Length: 122
Image (tube, rainbow, N blue to C red; front, side, top):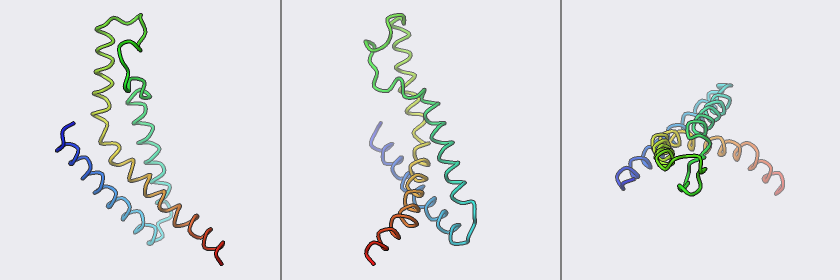
């Protein structure tokens, strides 16, 4: 991946973090009751889709020697290239999945962890 592609991916990740976190807390402040359910469902769907599309990461960092002997060298090469291509094509999912998980983690921190430690100090 080139430097410009990495920068573009990072910019999308940062922008999605800002937008999704802002949207979440604005909807929560407006007392929209289903915000966290929507974010959890979106996270689960994106996460499962990402894992399934990438075949459970079975081809991540695999070498031809690691693959079964029943596969021909051409099949091994095709499997490795397909795995790399799937990882490359599915990177965009992470630019949504990571901000959703970060948003939910911040919400848990705000609702559960901070009040817990606040009570311990009082």
